[in-house]
Image (cartoon, rainbow, N blue to C red; front, side, top):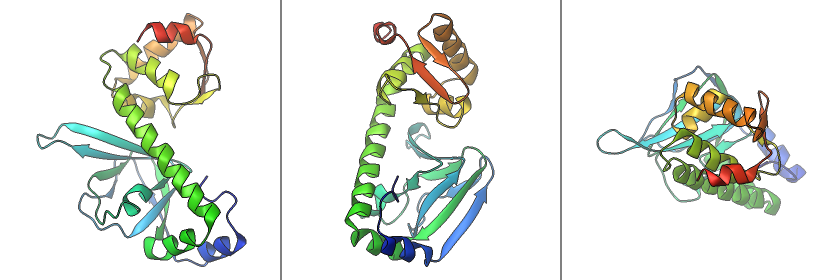
Length: 210
């Protein structure tokens, strides 16, 4: 999304940048809290998770990045110089790192590029807020119903974020419990589902659960 429609000049400038491509296995530490933010990561494949904790060690908030996403633009443009959360690979992942000091001037000189980044950051922030609200529900079926109704347009097929295992992590629920509720909704004719997408057939049913 962030590179869509950018100028040839911007494309050439990015191609001439120094890039570092790194691969991570599941649970590898990608970035540690307190590290200086020097590069933007473009996620080529896999899934990353950045988590903030309370003083008592309880998980407070988590952000997720999948193939095609980039981070941490919201920190860079927020003038934050250091990561304030640990970032791990949820599963095997590949990331290309671009230096902030080289990339930002390219973005700032390309209105389309800047618009893309603004839209990406806005969508990311809205998604994060919705996830926080989603996890305020107590029951698995309630969290799942809220996610299906609000994360994307429920009239369109909804992409499962990477895998059911990752979706369970996002919703902070047990994977087997999530799978059980998905099968129940499918058996009731509320949704149809394959390995990658979910289609909502009965929004009223889900709304009544909340």
